[in-house]
Image (cartoon, rainbow, N blue to C red; front, side, top):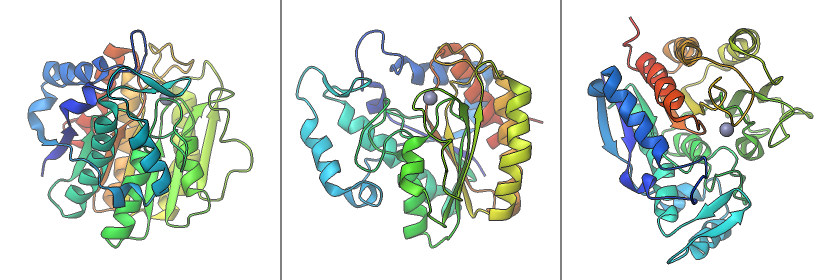
Length: 309
Ligand SMILES: [Zn+2]
């Protein structure tokens, strides 16, 4: 059964201005490396639908969803926070990004795909219930998790976040929710300076110091994530797949390599194989060094597709 690759041209029309690292070229860098590696031909491509209001409303208050609609400009750019802006295409892109994650869940839950990768922007994991933040507007992974719980009748969803930044929005939404387990690694102390003070019991946060590399990351996965995931027995696994902890990414100071993304995917996939009928939906978060981003996504998707030998 194929891996679904879900994206939409609208996601490349969202543009926060020249020199913004969260740029449209991120998606073409991923497409380029999928072609260059030959992995792209094994993926089943889907157009991301627009998320519906009821899907967004499982995570975000309707007043917030409507405020985002109202903020969308007809021309030019408006800033939602110092890092996060909307152009005339952003609303569509944000609805497609959340819609992609929902479609990914539907495909794997219905057995139409074994797993799915959503190549979308804007990213989502800093978006809180009622607050855009850090390039994020809607929390795509959270919307996917709530959709799976509400529509597909499962009770345990795991969220695996290896972005270099702590997924404070996802934690804000799910802290204390017994149906969701979140495991994460992130550089600390670093933006958004959260994730270390008394996290809820369903949050397994492993802060890593600037300069930490493959070994520290792999130890965190082996010692903290995997035992927690094994005990939780997730029925669906979601990745908040940010690739900005890569050594070549100057957004932050962790030093992961391409191979670490394949390795962590293998480790988590073994959990999904055992407990979740192999169901994995991965949603793009950060990753700003274009070549490293494309190569690292290939390592990740290659393992999802079982092409890693
Ligand atoms: Zn990030």
